[in-house]
Image 1: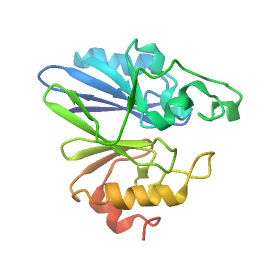
Image 2: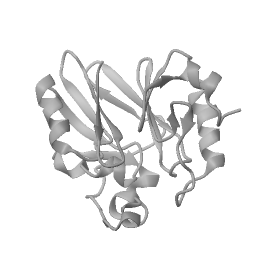
Image 3: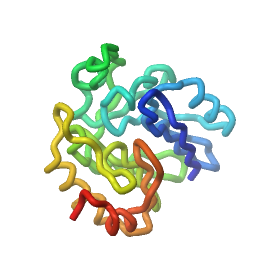
Image 4: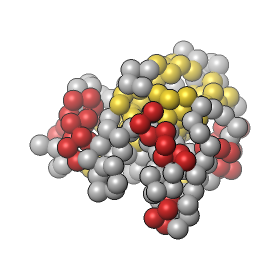
Amino acid sequence: MIIKKIVVGGMETNCYIAGDEATKEAFVIDPGGDYKEIKKIIDREGLRPKAVINTHGHGDHIIADGEFGLPVWIHRLDADFLRDPLKNLSGAFGIMFETGPASSLLEHGDILSFGKHDLEVIHTPGHTPGSICLKGDGVIFAGDTLFYEGIGRTDFIYGSQEDILKSIKERLFTLEDRYVVYPGHGPSTTIGHEKQNNPFIA
């Protein structure tokens, strides 16, 4: 699997491009700004994106959604965030940003295929009600659910600390230690490292 990380936007969001080496099919995950920089990587690698996938609906993960001319996929519980500046938090910064409606609504257990690779949708509520992670072969794109020795914020509207801790313990920490975690902000980590070192999870 081709994995490219581009740090985008004022909140330094990690946008990922996941691609298949043979077919060049790809997904763009969380394009939170800097469309031209993301497109430059896509073109350089000769990739053919199938869709934009949002791990959740906060503004710093969705700002460039509409610039690719691609379908936008998001969990059904966060679909309204795309159209509501109060829910996506852009209104809190005086931007009042909204994008177009989702093309497809995701559910826990959905399988998203590109070339010979699959990403499985894992619903991990807590940061937002519709937060998801995307599990591939030995990798997981964790959005703002799990960070390097940290977890996503739950003090925003619709956040829940109880839910995010349950999501991590029951749906992420059940994965093998070898899984590489690609978070929505900051450096990558592994499930094994977080089990041993994450101070938020007893």
